[in-house]
Image (cartoon, rainbow, N blue to C red):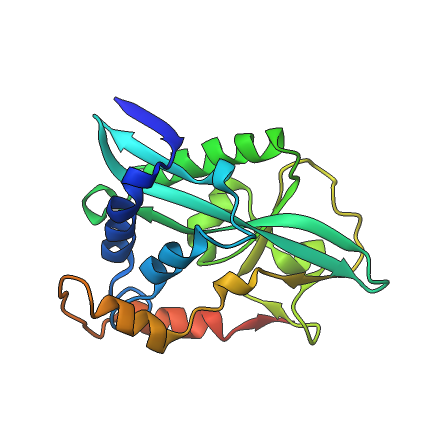
Length: 211
């Protein structure tokens, strides 16, 4: 039986452990995502109503967390939007559709709260099937006018974006320092840090831009 519900205080350690195991050695030797989760809940941009866990037969196997972000046009007009991450599924349950379930459920809840746009950074292969498109198709860029290949957007309400050029800004909580994450990781059960090909793939994608 599958159940998706809001995270509770008692779930914090479980969720952080799942996040750590899901991301360890994926993008760098070790990971920082569990430290982000650890910090995110207490930040003003965190949206508790969009903090969900997925249970399989009463056991938590995944979670998704959202924070506020914003778009700013050339005239200084601001639009409050969403970003999510990390989306974490325990390694033994990955590639079974549970992440998609969490995303789709959270999209519906986001609309009910009045949100209409999500911008994320990630591997397009994981998100285009959920309706995300290149940021350039929505004319959403980062400072300097560049369009990162890993930045994607989804209109929760069709035709929300009007074609104006938008500059994307995420929450300061997303700016995790690797040295701080390492110190936190060192307080937890030891996991082996390894170099693997997915780290080079991440490096290439995260340093690529669309012309």
